[in-house]
Structure formats: C-alpha cells, structure tokens
View: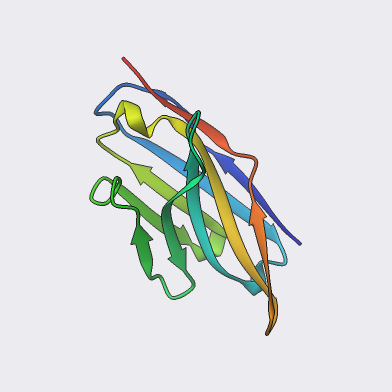
Length: 120
C-alpha cells in the first residue's frame, strides 16, 4: 500500500507563487508515476502535471509554462512549483500515484488534498 501526504497549500494573491509537496511512503518501490490533479467547485478533477520514474513530465495546457513538477527520489517526494497564479487556479490539489502490482494490475492512490486559494 502507498500513502501520500500533501502539504503547502494556502491563500495567495494573483500573480503570486506557491509550492506544494507530496511525500510517499509504503510500497513506493512499485510506484512508477506520480502526478497532481485538482478539483474546483462544480468541476471534475483534472490532471495538472505528471512525472514518471524517468523524469518525463507532462502538463495540462492551462498551467504549462507557469507550473513545474519535480521529484526528489531520496525524499520520496514530488513538488509542484506554481507561479503566476490566477484566481482560476483555485482548487483542491490532490497528489496521485500509480503503483504496479502485477503485469495486469495497477493500483491508483490519492492523497487527502490540499486547498489552494488565489484571491486578492
């Protein structure tokens, strides 16, 4: 089992920056990809950024160029550096991880979420 704990959310003014952290524990040796999703009121959860074990990254169009996902393998932690924040970035941000259990089974894990509010 994999446990994910996020931190770093809060209130920030438009144009400001914030960094989220997500630390994984448990059977992390089988985790091959981690990511950040977000959900704002009235909307579905959407992918924000992802990073795999090779360091390959992908971003959603609304955040590309403003957000950066990175990982510290020694700390089993991924980060989401968010800059030039906009009110529409306001959401609960969730850390996710894909754990390969077998050749035909992948388990999905989620953190508890952290609130990010962008407002003046």
